[in-house]
Image (cartoon, rainbow, N blue to C red; front, side):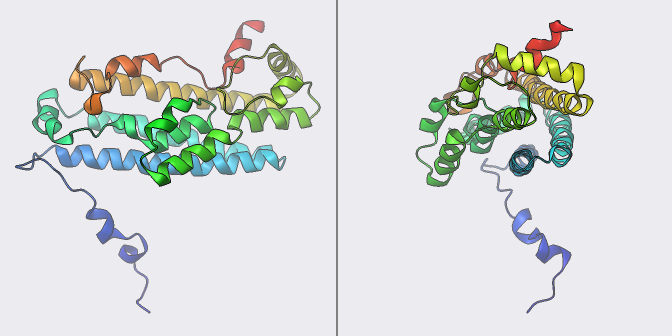
Amino acid sequence: MPEMTYGSYLKIDELLGLQQPVSEPVEHDETLFIIIHQIFELWFKEVLHELDQMVDHLDADHPALSGHQLKRVLKIFKTLIVQLDVLETMTPLEFDSFREFLSNASGFQSAQFRELEFALGQKSPDHLDRFAGNEREYANLLRRYHQPCLWDAFIRYVHRQGYDIPQEFLTRDVTKAVGYSAGVQQALITIYRTDADLSRLCESMTDLDEGLQEWRYRHVMMVQRTIGTKIGTGGSSGVEYLRSTLFRPAFPDLWAIRSAF
């Protein structure tokens, strides 16, 4: 059996062979574009990995352990945003030099980011249809579409701690996007007034929601800086679509209670 090395363990040869520009002749900045987006996908994979573990910890009534996973996810979101700074070193002219070669390829087609949205409760059946042509991507999305999201796991945990959660929320249709609940808000207000440990976890959940919204905003600005108001690759509406995703919280009740104190 070959000796384990740094390169063999991390599959370095395979990894470094995955950056394959399609422009002819090859444009210098396409390599940066490919690497950054491959890194995004790797981080999305890790975020999903951590969120799944967080749900498992909440289901097992281990909030401290779930908080550890949440802290890691928050750091990853900060890293994702910083990587946009690197991408923004590419001027509109440099991107335009290879943009036509991308054909229908678009970040709009990132199945893992759609999984991330589903995991955080931002679900839409429209996204399922868009990935029907890829068996693996469709199966992963369909599984998450029918699974309870992170907010469902969190509120179930809160309920098990004795807080009054409306039955209609506990039995809600988990294929729907998370909405507002006056009853859940009342339980959260009680937590903030009486339970320091759980209120800290609520604040970390708010940090996660804010981190997702910050990523969306920075992504919109990066795209606008690079292509302006042009139609996006793959035929998406580009900046117009991305703007429509802004300021849509994953955990709306955590924001709704801010005026209650």
